Amino acid sequence: MKFQRIQDLRVDADKTQTEIAKVLDCDRNVYGRYERGVHDIPVWALIKLAKYYNVSTDYILGLSNERHK
Image 1 (cartoon, rainbow, N blue to C red):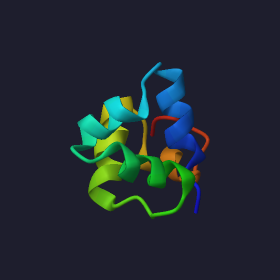
Image 2: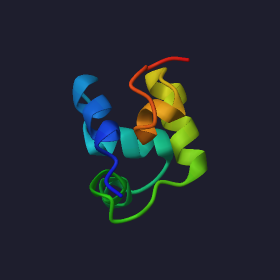
Image 3: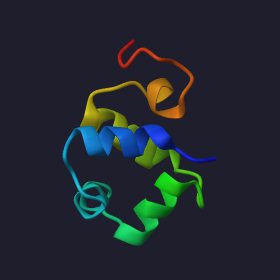
């Protein structure tokens, strides 16, 4: 499953994959695989990204179009 919203959030924040990988404490290639949907994003990373971008996990997963609950 491709997680388009994590890519969109990153681009909107003018961040690189390397910068977000540092936030997640992972390699840039691993983070890139999350964006492309090669690997499912782990729950801990989903929560960390939601807090970082100040959005709901449902928004990141595409379950809601509302950024906040």
